[in-house]
Each structure stands twice: as structure tokens, then as C-alpha cells.
Length: 228
Image 1 (cartoon, rainbow, N blue to C red):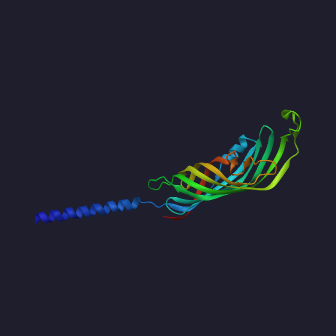
Image 2 (cartoon, rainbow, N blue to C red):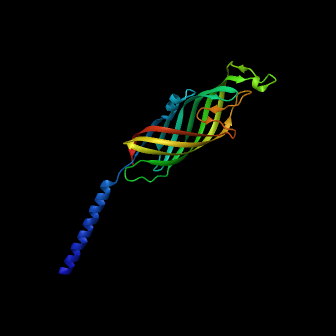
Image 3 (cartoon, rainbow, N blue to C red):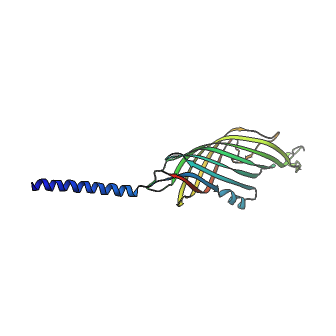
């Protein structure tokens, strides 16, 4: 009889320990905020202070739709003066990008950090001004005259795709610092008459292969709507 009593007590002790462990686990389980994250790219204003030929402003936003997936967008304006050996031109306009990010980082407890990959479709509407160019009408190409009468072409546009990699770190509650790098592939680009587009707002410098690169440093804040 005593043996059965001891066994019964051991069973009760085990059940009690299991209940306490479950209660502790439940108490440390956390919920993650789902909401709209808004931010700004701080690299463009900094570049504008360093380089007088460059200026721009870019806003970023994303919305969490599941544990690892986000709808993401970037939009803004940019102006860039491109100086070549024989030409000086300015590109000025706005851009818009839309796509998705996938967070490949497995967070601990209530952490919300990200190591993500993403894809964007992007478009830009801009104008380009040929500020000056070196004319080669003389017999010696290098002795040509410099034409300084600006010629502006409006109504230009471009469409491209971007492959993005980046990180976001939650430094304070719902406040994030981020960095991303993008590889861009031009799909369609409208050039001015008798001159090639050298720079597209949002795309950056256009190389011969019609590919490009970009990066941004962001500060963003999540406005939580629900917790899951």
C-alpha cells in the first residue's frame, strides 16, 4: 500500500512540474508586432553634403504580411550632374519601387531583426539637360569648341528590376537601422534625341550593359497594428 502511495505521489509531482514548466513557457512566449514600417534613406542627404553634384530624398516603407514576408516600397526624387570628358549633363526626376522582402533570419524570443533578400519592380519619370558639350566640328577633335547652351529633354522614363539584399536591426522598441545593396537590370529606357541617358533617378549610373548598383542606409519605425 505504501509503495502505491509513493508511486501516486511521484505521478502528482511529475504532473505538477509539467504544469509549472508549461506555465513558465507560456509566460515567456512573446508576440511580434505586425504593422506599417516607415523610414528614410539617410545616405542621400549625406551624399548631397559631400558631393555638390548629387542631391536626393528617398522614403522607404514595408508592411509585414506573414512571419517572414513583407511588402516593400521605396520612392523619392533625385538630381545628379554627370561630368564626362566632353559632356556635362543633369538628370532630374522621381522614382517609385514596389516588391517583396523575405526575412531569412530566425529571431530569438521578441527580437525583430532581419537578414533579407528581395525583389523590386521600379520606374522613373525624369528629364535630362545637356548643360554643355565639346564640339568636334574643327579638323582637330580636341580643339573643338565648347557649346554651353543647355538643351533639356522632358518626358523621359525608365523601367527596371532590382534584386536586393540587406539587414535591419531593431535598436530600440520598433526603431530600426538598416542597410541594403541592390543589383539593377534595365528593362526599358527612353533616351533624348542624339544623346544617351547616363543617369536615371532611382537607378543611378547607367553602364554600357544597362545594369547598375545601389545601396541605402535607413532609419525606420514600425507603427504596430496587431500582435501575433
